[in-house]
Length: 500
Ligand code: PPY
Image 1 (cartoon, rainbow, N blue to C red):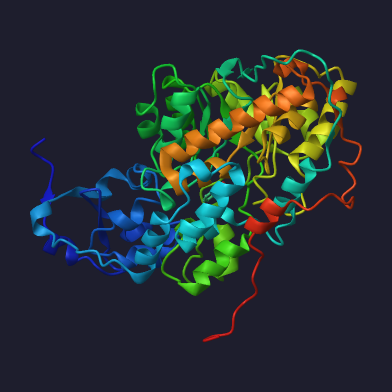
Image 2: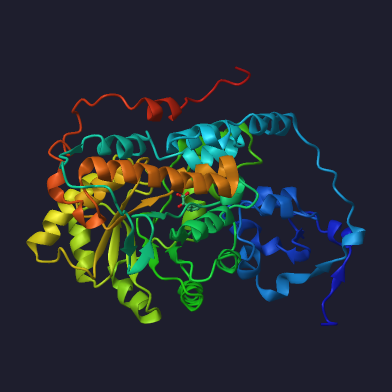
């Protein structure tokens, strides 16, 4: 190992310009000069750290191995002699002090009794930019709100006198045991909201037999998450398909080798939706925030967001690629982001093992319908062709789920399980691992109550006759207002005048 070059702080500091730009990340020195214009977050943010240690800015936003996989080996210059780098005494900003005070004043976890409570605490304690990135949805945010409302257009037809002294809501998902008919869906950039990031999910899931879907764009590296797993803990992987299929092949095969039990390929994001809350944040402070969504220099910001994102996700992905995925992995393949019966039929005929009826938490195509509404037409179309029910093809739904009763409605209508993303994310942003455990406990309590009141002792007894979904397609029916949701929902803002 004697050929590892050791560099000093002053040596790195000499390369602090666009012409020659070195940065330090996790104790290693990289020459990123040629990468400046390729960086999905734009060159400006890298130049801010030119000649310096960028670890703190890098960490919440990138998986630890992002830099090593993106830069050719000759740009890995060596390690830094830590004694030669001046210790940066981090100034605690007023905003940070205020945030700390808010964190200290959080409601005790015992007072958290539903999933909306987590969202409300997260909204208050998260750094503004993290909240903007997590909570934002596309365009007018119609779909994110519809996701919630759609569940309220499905009404119960309960059964009585069925001896519900014992009820069991455990199930299997892709043949894997799960204590809940719910899996933790992928959300990105967990360290923006909590220093331990997605590991909070991993540890909580381990303690409660819940399956975690690991996001391609998690802040924690895939291996850090798997290394933290309990023996036998089950994971799925959410995949953004890279333009460079070799990178994708290696990533998928590595995941399979490490025991991942299902590959959820995201198919609804050939380009990232325009999320205005997140975009506005960049205009408030151009040098911070969810870097992944920033424009390249010289590119109009609203264009730049999408362009930057499209730079690593392959928009040419098509049905023709499915056989290739089947050839590189034996993991079950699930298409995540189906929004119509036509595509559900194509997915079945393509021989994948499942689909997620999802609109990406309202973050992609605005006014796309909710997963629960799409479920009804999908089941009808599949049944017509003799494709449903089929134990080898599972249907999942995600988006807007805040109650066990939402989950049970999806199951009654034909879903095998339901994905829950933001509520678990908000739970760990607000309370770390303990928050996630509490969220799981809340689900358990709600499942117990709802199944008893519904007259269903097992998940198999949650059947279509138990729901009246006749209003689901009527987007204008009146329902009582959902105050918890409405009170946590933050309306979109308009552009502000300077100095206003
Ligand atoms: C999302 O933000 O909706 C994602 O799916 C994650 C993401 C993050 C950054 C770039 C592309 C996708």
